Amino acid sequence: YRQLVRDVLDEDVEFGIALIKAGRDTGSGAIPYEVGCAVRIRHVEELPDGRFNITCERTRRFRLAEQLGEDPYLRAEVEFPPIPADVDDEATRAMTGELREKFSAYLRVVLALQDSWQRRFRMPDDPAALGDFVAGQIDVAARIKQEVLQAPAVARRPAVRDPPQASAQAPPVPRGPS
View 1 (tube, one colour):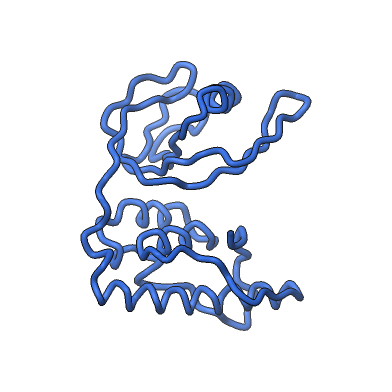
View 2 (cartoon, helix red, strand yellow):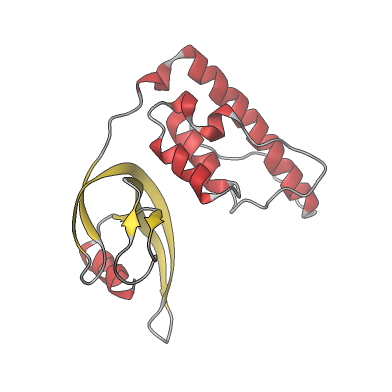
């Protein structure tokens, strides 16, 4: 990953992240899922031993078109799918409005359990981006996050269909709203 980070920083480009379907996530022989997420490095800290702490921001989904090799890291040609057709449907807008309300309530419970609070939460306005944002923030199994990436329609994404519920029990702590 060190070479990947250096190359991305030198060229100021996005890079892709895909969940590994089979094989090891380091070394050769990894088989990634066909759908992943392109990201851009927003902050980098190089450590004295040559490792990096990086913060990335999701930019868009991709579909693997062709793997190009693994030296020095897995590389592929990708395609960027179109915006989901249901993004402007009234039903989708209603579902994402409910998602926004439930996720805000979820965040308030999480913050209250940490003896903290926040007046407002910044979330994407776009229904597709909101579903992706929520899925990226909650602590759920990687397979569920993969379902979100692969869903062809916004309303079929798990985070939109079944938003997180606020409860008195300690929910998993999200990585924090942006």
